Image (cartoon, rainbow, N blue to C red; front, top):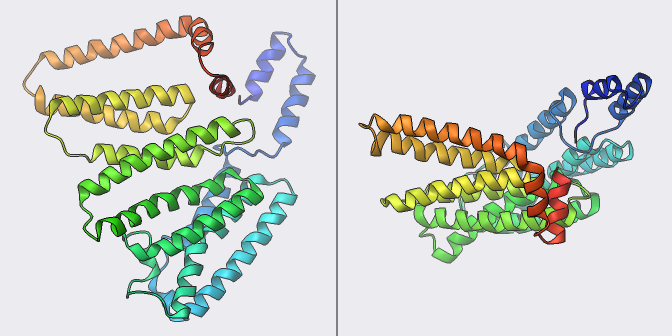
Length: 342
């Protein structure tokens, strides 16, 4: 629970604590280094700088680096990694968890570049593709770089235990699944196959994130990035499925509504955001295709919307009783997870 100064002052006005205690408690909480990302200027600077550094060595890598040759690329990558690890240890010793996690993640993101340089140096690179294609083109020979990134990522995450380190691991799993599909299909990868693989990979990642969430919710939010990329992969794969059936489109709408419910239950905004996008897309389809000439549809939709608002009012009124009764039926680990989100 985030506690603001305004809330502490309100507690003091209600004589729950004194004004001096409220001020002292606020100063104490404000001085604590936060391990959870927040939308503050300090954290924005942390992530902006970190993502610029990571992007420079991944997404925005240009062909100029090819002039260094394989040995040069490997050496520079190792030098950057040494700097990243040094900063990680220094920030960690000072209790600055967020910048320490960003620097450790930077090291993991250098792994595919280092492996690419090593392969170029040893003369075992199989074609004319360059490292800059790694994030844009699906190819089988990226698998060596992806497996190496997973190994380094898992070891680094085990050593430092920072939640942000899960991000490159989740992205690499996504990449690796697509590249393995090319190996299995023999370079005959169709858009339909790609969508199916993405959808099922997303489901697996969501299941993995849920398991991680239950096991580690009392330590840190290690499931955050797995949830994000799992939901993105699942939703994109589901949305890009081709269908001419009204029933399948309605089922798609129901799945998106279910995602909103799951997101509200687990307090995971990514489910709600993509569920809302899918639901709005289906309603737009009804408005502009199925009921484009019907004057009754907007009225019916408005009434449904107001009904949902009233349902929210009823839920708020009886939320405590419903929550207590429903959670009593759940397994203890899941009940503990939901209680930690309250």
